[in-house]
Every structure is written in C-alpha cells, then in structure tokens.
Image 1 (cartoon, rainbow, N blue to C red):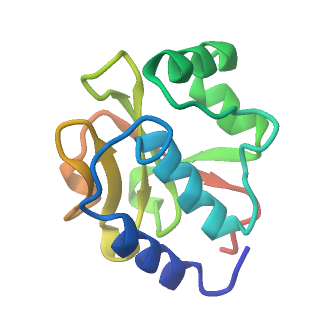
Image 2 (image 1 turned 90 degrees about the horizontal axis):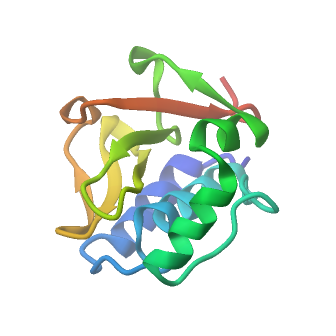
Length: 144
C-alpha cells in the first residue's frame, strides 16, 4: 500500500472525472479496479477477475466469478459497516440499471464517491450517504 494513497485517489479521480462511460475503459469495474490498485499498490483482483471490452465480455467475466462477495473474500477483502467506511474502501451496489451488472465505486476523501454509470459517465458523488442498498469492502493490507 502506498503512503499517500488518498492524494493519489484524488489525482486519479480528477483525471477521469467527466469522461464518458465505456466498457473496459471507464465502466465502474475498471474505474474501481484502477482506484484499488492505487490504494494497495497492486491489482487486488489479479488472476481472479479478467478484462473486458464489451457488455458481453463483462457479463462473461462476472458469470465466471460466481458473485462479487466471493471474489472480494477470495482476494482478501472483508465487509465493513457503513459507519466504519473510509477513503479507499470499495462500494458494491445492486444492479445499476444497466445490463444486470452490479455497481462498483470507491470512497474518496471526505466521504465522496468515485463512480461511473452509463447515463452520467465518470463522476463524483457528493457523499456516500446518497447511496442506497450498498455494502462497503476493505482489503486486509490497508493500514488502520
């Protein structure tokens, strides 16, 4: 894990914010994976989650995983209570309204959320409390 991951996350968010949504480039899975890689200085999903460039490819990757909770646990992640979430934690939401895929996002400083949706592209939500039906996840190599 890098020492200044919070600064790196903000720089990353500023660099991708307002980009249009695109499978395999700026979809929620890629944005979240890239952010988690910045936080942990490694791809926490390496060897488990493949890559995709289309909706069909993303669905195929998701189907091969069984479910996200299993992937998270198998890669060292654990569930975190909403009031204990912090910068660098991942958000897992129910179907985001497109293609029966889950919504993935990352917590930024001050409780903001970096996310990507087909309708808005990459954007920052003002505060995680605006989200509903989500769970928060943290990988074990994070410093308390």
